[in-house]
Image 1 (cartoon, helix red, strand yellow):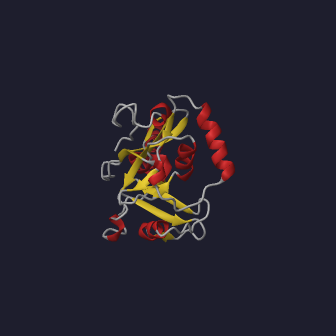
Image 2: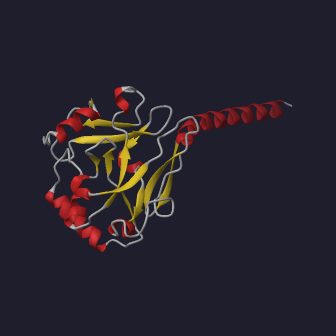
Image 3: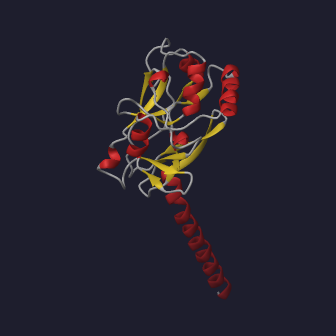
Length: 220
């Protein structure tokens, strides 16, 4: 009888530990999980309590885009070599630009510069609302941080400086993130950026419209 009681106690302890571990794991698995896609990790947003703005991707003239950072020549040359050898079916994250005009590049300066060097008249780009923070500073979906001190920066300040011709942030001097959960979890912006096949990108619009058939969108 005593052995039966002790066995029941052990069972209850194991059950409680399993429930505790499940409780610790579930909140993290609820909002973001990893899936191996195109030989790289892609984060997919699945938080049912969080609504991320659906990306708007369109063709733009890369020469019309205004940079807010400098590019690195070695990085650019390496990217060009990579793109020349890249398979047409390989996916590439599109640059991120402001929806307000004239559009400023928020992320993807080297991809834009490489496209210009390759003579592409049009490239795909993700337009994001750069005015949201004016009315929703704490709840904006896209944020910018300084790499110098880690402080959050106003996108409007970055955009205004760029449009005035001042490239004040060096090479990769800013860090861009997307808020991907109701708990405020942040990921590097490139991790959630829509991707399209390099062959479609290099077609500069000749391959047709950008839609679900050729854009790798994340699950919202």
